Image 1: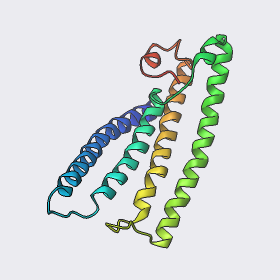
Image 2 (image 1 turned 120 degrees about the vertical axis):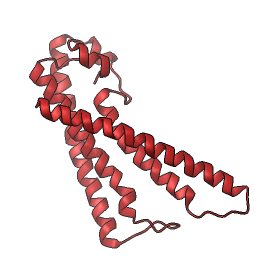
Image 3 (image 1 turned 45 degrees about the vertical axis):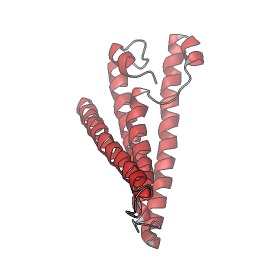
Image 4 (image 1 turned 90 degrees about the vertical axis):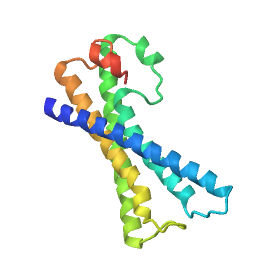
Length: 174
């Protein structure tokens, strides 16, 4: 499990670097679109590229953010419960989230397959729409694997609750 966790952390690091590149690309396309709008130069599809980049950003960032607790969460009720109940609810909450991610990933894969089968493309640049829908599946799978790795490490250490795990408390509260 520890090697799976190390692989997951390496993938998280790679995703963070990829997110920076995609963000720079997106900002560049928006800037170029604004500049081109005020000149005689016409560049087709820059707004489309920026939108598609944003979709990839959202799902890649969510995949990393779920593991480290960077997503919106409400912990006041959870923190008010006794330690034993918190551990049980933490496992239940994680299992429920993993089931949801399983269904959502299956749905995302279906969308990607539909776009491949129908051969649909984007209006301006004619980018295959499976590329636009792929982040739903990719991000969900990455989030699922990241949460499984984190859950496995915490359960093998016996530190399910972030309050009892110093490392987890520094990087995660979910």
